[in-house]
Length: 274
Image (tube, rainbow, N blue to C red; front, side, top):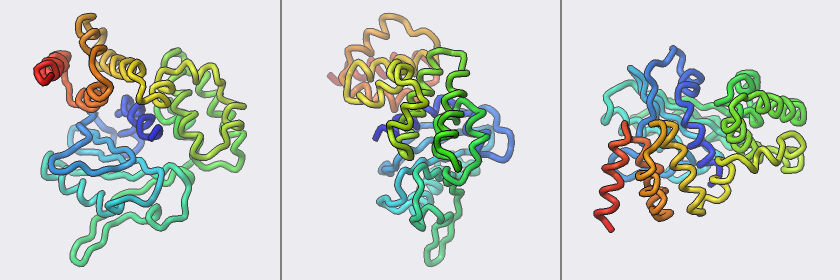
């Protein structure tokens, strides 16, 4: 799903999401791997953030229905996270698309002898002010509460235009267009978000052409450069010869990398496997 990949891009702002969702000021926020031990649970998009004393589990949902059901899945993640990290866990399910399904208004799993609570955020009920004033959250702003969709999109477009860094501005615009599509007609979106900016967004291109190898390469290299600075040209070439499937696997693996040395070890393993 394009929404999954858009949400993955927003994970490059872990501090801002932790500040939004935690009651205390987070410190030393890092992104943890998105699959735990045992069989992975399938979800729209899951991210785990680790602060000094807490794990933050965020799950974006476009639909309320899932298998297993959301409350049971949240309980399962809670047990796994607690066993693996031995820290308090805060869990937040963020519903992107407006729905009247009761699961979007359910904040606990209830079994015969077990009750587990978690937090639910329905974006269509949220005040847009917080999202409009934070570039990391700006792509979610079109999904927040409004009496005037046109006025909201106009304000979003104005705030996107204020982002000084050109690459960030293009990428935020691309992510905003993707999320806005959950709520608004394309013609209305294009009235306010300049099509040329969105088309220049590398993120936008990567999302819409996920199966395209060149797009995958750009996405991976940009993520590596963002985390570790400029990557040596020899390692860039090693990334470029990877298959699409390997690039997708690397995209998940690099969340666990702490240095360029981890990338080199991973690439060596791929060479040995083929």
